[in-house]
Amino acid sequence: MRRLSAWMRYPRGDVTLTRTKIWMGTGNEHKYQEAKQVLAEYGIELERMDIERVEIQADEPEEIAEYSLQVLDSDKPLLIEDAGLYIDKYGGFPGPYSSYALERLGNMGILKLLEGDADREASYLSAIAYRDGETTATFRGEVKGEIAHEERGTGGFGYDPIFIPAEGDGRTFGEMSGEEKTKISHRARAFRQLGEWLVKQ
Ligand code: ITT
Image (cartoon, rainbow, N blue to C red; front, side, top):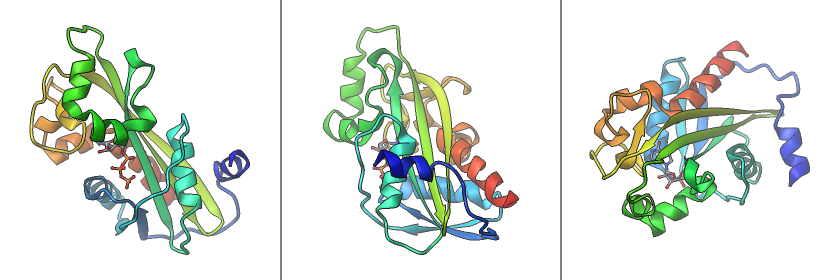
């Protein structure tokens, strides 16, 4: 597994990418919609491949995304994104276990973990693994912030009602419009890197 991750980390080959349409393998429509909006800024159309992805346990989101992509049999120019919420005080938990923690604890459970705690720093990470023929590359985006004291807002999805980005005005992502979240989000940052890279190919 390590060996494959290592060769997939670097772009290789001399395939010319003149892509205006690429695919994202995800079971999460919210992630797809956010990513689609960002890539549209670069004139790139994103299609969704509705899959249940195979995830390994690893510390780095790139490694998780790379593996999910590697086991996906497709000739299309394709990407997988792995994202998560990393709480500083808990050594980055839930991080790679973000889906599981959301399912089992929910936002209320995360709030309970931090009850009465002043140390609420956290960040969201997004890692993209992209493959087009023999060419592969990874990209990462991050947004720092803190965990709110209560759930606020009905926008976004997942952990958004409890995450307050540091670059914002004190509102949670759940209280922001999609457009506002996309200005500073981890996902938007990772997808802008991909967009810029694709445009340069
Ligand atoms: P796929 O694996 O099918 O792409 P997923 O929902 O499992 O979809 P991730 O593993 O990337 O996606 O995300 C892990 C968890 O973190 C999951 O429960 C998401 O709802 C949550 N999450 C990811 N990005 C988020 C965001 O921008 N805002 C709020 N929660 C997010």
